[in-house]
Image (cartoon, rainbow over all chains, first blue to last red; front, side, top):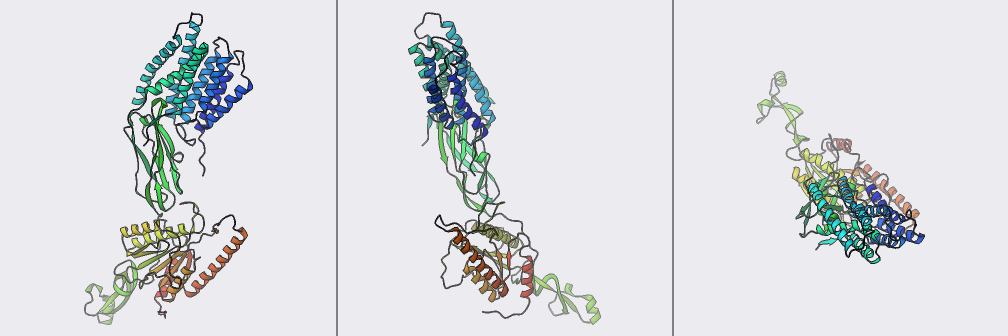
Amino acid sequence: MTPRTSSSQIALRALVLLGPVVAVLATGPAGNWPPWWIAGAVVGTAAAAAWAPDSPYGTAAGLVVLGWWAIALEDSLPASILVAALALVVAHVAALLASYGPPTMPLDSATLVLWVRRGALVALTVPAAWVLALLLRGEPEQPGIWLLGAATAFAATVAATAALAVRTGEG
Amino acid sequence: MSSWRATAALGRAVVLGAVAVALALVVGKPVLMVLAAPFVTFTALGLAHRPHRLPRLDSRLDHGVLHEGQGTTSRLVVGDGDEAEYVTRAAGRPAYVAIRPHDGQVGGLLAGGVPAVEISPRRWGRRVLGEENVALYSPWAGFRFGPVRLGGRPVRVLPTTAPYDSRAEAPQPIGLVGAHRSQRSGSGTELSGIRPFQPGDRLRRVNWPVSLRTRTLHVVTTRAEEDTGVLLVVDALADHGGSGGVGAAASSLDLSVRAAAAIAEHHVRAGDRVALRVVGRGQEQVGYGAGARHLRRIQDQLATLRTGDPGEPETGVLQLGVTGGAIVVVLSPMLAESMGTVAATLTRRGVAVLVVDTLPPDARPATLGDEQDPALAALAWRMRRIERSVVLERLAALGCPVVPWRGPGTVDEVMRRLARRAQLPRVVAR
């Protein structure tokens, strides 16, 4: 009997496929829809990543999304970037969970809950970076300001997740 | 040797985070920093939880001996696994082995305990159980240990003890003690007759009503109760029909092995001596014996029998080592000429022979390849079955009963007939 792909794996792989697609289409509401070949490239690489979550195809899909966001808009910070970043985070976590085992292996609820909490925690860096960028947009650019911002976001997240990790281990 | 290696997820986070930050700085697009922020965080957390110690993996089975249909649990032992967060177990899929849950593909957080895998062999024989690939993941899935291949453990799967019972007496019991009624008088419980008292008779055997009436002492005589010898002959020359394991379709060898195990268990429990002779490539045999350990030896041999031609001399009849008074139970699909010959020879010699027909009704010839003509194969199979029916009719004409295996009570009627016939005088060929 051929083992069947579990329903949880199907759901995870659907998120791996949809995440980059949503992220690349998120420039549309800001006034610049991606051309068909960009969207096609994202769909293709995301589909390959959904088929093989442990492969570099997910990285390729993310790079295409980054490249499009780099050229699609001028110096603007639309709210749709939040949607794009969150979609990429969801796709990344889904691919990570899907690559924990073979396609026939279902995901247990404890692991899912843990990673939903982790994903939500990491996703907090997205609005934080967006607000920071909005605040600094009119200011004269300081050398290394972006690296400083990223380091600050990282330090805050590490501190928060350290506490989460202790609670999980105790539980 | 396996070691901790970066996962694809960590690589993805590193590349996306680094490229986004670099692009943001180069082209001056703050929007890219928003995209980079979560991946920089994922990278940092993955790297921060990099493990330093190599874990040790070992798997164990709860049971070393199983009957087909029974189950055991494969447990994974993780040593020095404090730095690991998640474990994945991907069990192999050997034939005739059922694995739960999810066909042995399980994973879980180590904090909640290593997930166990339940294994159940579905057919007798030698099976390797517990073979699997195991991988460990560090917190935040930055690093993976493995997958490490853990070898399975060879387990001898004994044939299932099918429900079987028989109330028929043995045809020719000649042992010392047992449960079968003997043809000679002895210290049993079943009445044989009443005869005049002789010196040496026990006083408690005196029958006082008869003695008073006849005015001479008379004693009651009883039949001795003896054990018998049962020789089980299993035809392992070939396996006909498909096998789906216990509870599903059974091949001829499945029926033979399970029937032999059931008959052996019944007779051993009745105190009889049981022997086994496998006619097959392995030529496994177990001498006469009784008791639970002897039954286990028979089951072990049945579990490890190999099909194929034993290479007996073409001119000679199979030498089964039949002793006087033993019952020979031949378990065979009766498609090999040698089995019919040996059953007929033993019957002519006066041995009580019973043939249990184990050919499944829906047995089909095995396909030999694409070049084989299906119509020709079907015709050959039909001719073979006709020849087989002729052999069975000739055996019946010789006085050798042939019964299909039906489980409990299969051999009762024929054993009773054999027992009645054994009490009649007859001329046998020597």
